[in-house]
Length: 140
Length: 140
DNA sequence: CTTTTTTTGCAACAATTTTGAAAAAGTCAT
DNA sequence: ATGACTTTTTCAAAATTGTTGCAAAAAAAG
Ligand SMILES: [Zn+2]
Ligand SMILES: [Zn+2]
Ligand SMILES: [Zn+2]
Ligand SMILES: [Zn+2]
Image (tube, rainbow over all chains, first blue to last red; front, side, top):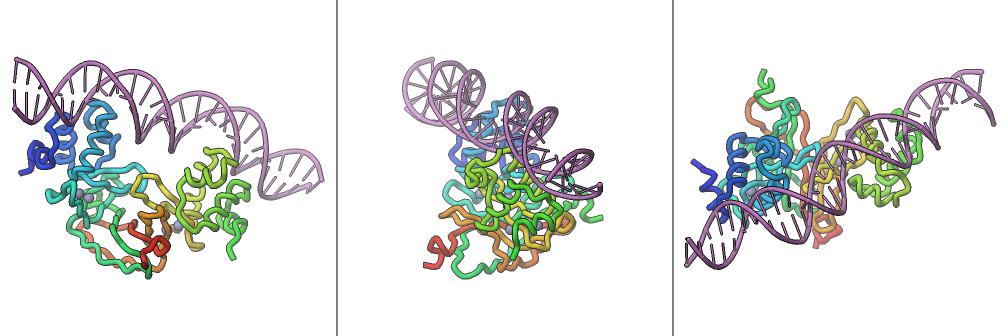
């Protein structure tokens, strides 16, 4: 089982209370979170600036990855344990429920290779799928 | 040929100078633009707030569509002439060049159907491809 | 426990986006 | 063309969001 302490030390990060809180939040929620959401969830127990810096550090060290959002507010989600500062590989898609508003990583969905016109060199692909999730009646 | 006047009246919009300027910009550039870019291109000839509201109106009426960006700054691009306030169909992908920073709609690329896990109902798909464009040596 | 290094919180700042309301401009029927 | 009517633009102000420098606090190392 992945404990916050374990994850932090694995990524050469100090075990501070803010980092443990933020990381625990990602582990509990299992969804993508934006900075304002994190700030709200932690009930203003720590400074806004600290959250910005924590997210920046986590991004850099491969603890979390960016999740695009259609409302412009960048979200973040936990990386797989294979991610590090050097290797940051993500080939999964993100699903945002238009009903409940939550976004989650879908590791199961396979993104087929996309054929680009001549001259375009593909380096990275970001897919945001939107619709209704199982909890919101997608399966009714 | 699509003139700005034509496009505006087709979407039940008044032909005002700001709307014509912004629309002409999209027609000329043929790339996705963010609000700050538009403001800069128009050389502060009109108020910042007006651009925000113009973009909101264009979005609503199906003149432009959102283009996701990895830096969080939302961009916008012209819709096909088939888009309206009611129907807003987009199945193309967006390509952002990591070298020159421009983003463009790639109508030619076909996005294969993606298989989602049970319970997920797909309504819309947003694909942001990143790499180098032909102009920046993608074809060297 | 002491030293060293890193992180946090605060304050101030800058930039971005939103809102309200009056002035200006566009539309339409004389 | 003119005036009534509606929509759009502008300006001022607020709210939100993101950044930077630095001193205090906390974590790791010895
Ligand atoms: Zn990662
Ligand atoms: Zn993800
Ligand atoms: Zn459209
Ligand atoms: Zn597009």
